[in-house]
Image (cartoon, one colour):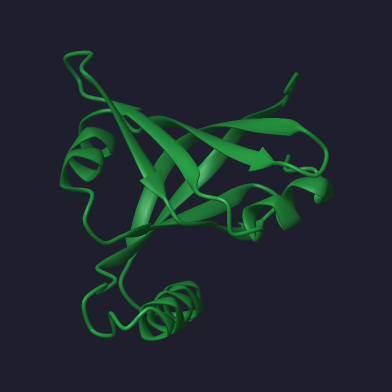
Length: 131
């Protein structure tokens, strides 16, 4: 489902928007540093601080992720569904390594503890040209 051209956008270092909604319809928008590519049908988002986001996806598993490609002037809108969380394994380990490297580079080592790698199934992908 994810086109090959989306993967580099996930890794470009530009913050990502993650929008969720509670069971009662109250929206929440969070900025995340990166969405991790797992395969053409799945992505992962780090769970570090986003308690409201986590509460929302446990109540209502649907979310929207907006990726920004400044080079091609496209926003990619991913409609996703929360599937599960991982607290160990290869996806968690890769995410944890990346987060710790960023924290170390900014003098914040040990502060950004990864609680889980939250795995989402991609339901749709829509490119939105930016004018």
